[in-house]
Image (cartoon, rainbow, N blue to C red):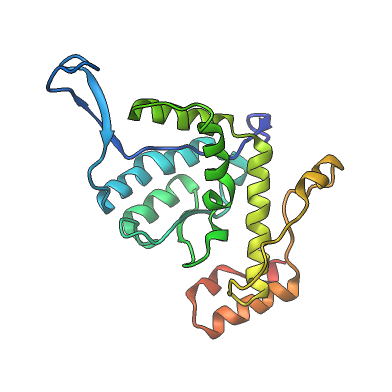
Amino acid sequence: MYDPHRKQHWDAKVGIWYFTEQYAAKRRSKNRAKGVICTRNIDMVDRTVYKNYLLTKVFPAIKEKWPRKDRGQVIFVQQDNAKPHVPPSEPDIVAAGTEGGWNIRIWCQAPNSPDLNCLDLGVFASMQSLQHRLPRKGIEALIASVEEAYRDMKTDTVDNIFLSLQASMLEILRQKGGNLYKTPHLGKAKLRRAKLLPVSLSCSRDLYEAAIVLLRAASRGSALLFDSSSI
């Protein structure tokens, strides 16, 4: 995605954060002196912790890095259905997402749909393959390894993941919300070499309108987000 304000391409990486905390070592050991600041996992990540990360880390990072020309567009922050996650209508989340003219919304991933998760589609696999080349011990070293793998993940990899996500979305629309489809293969490497790789995939009007009819028939409020006259 090209950012005309910064006059450069954006790599679509918003950030990566860890549920950890720092503490001072109470005792001396062979690995560290007493009083040294160490890192450990947060014992319990509940809704309060998760919500705080959204408000103080994720949303500010989106507003800082997202191209300004797209500020008015809807930006969905997708979460799975783990218990700590917040309802999309949480007042503090809605307020933070709309502050400053932004339109950032929380969106829950559909159950049993790993193909709708960019992390499962390729981010984890790409980072793990890079991380395993740099075996390290200790939580600080592990964090450093993950950060390095995230930083070194190529833009082409990110592009491939988002195209796979869009292809999966189209298949789900064709299946009327079902997941009984074969994983789509676009031949992205071949298309890239031929300089024919699309930036995004298009959805036909018939498929789009059929999906809206299906949502309305099921009395799903999400149908209100879409307008047939916009295509």
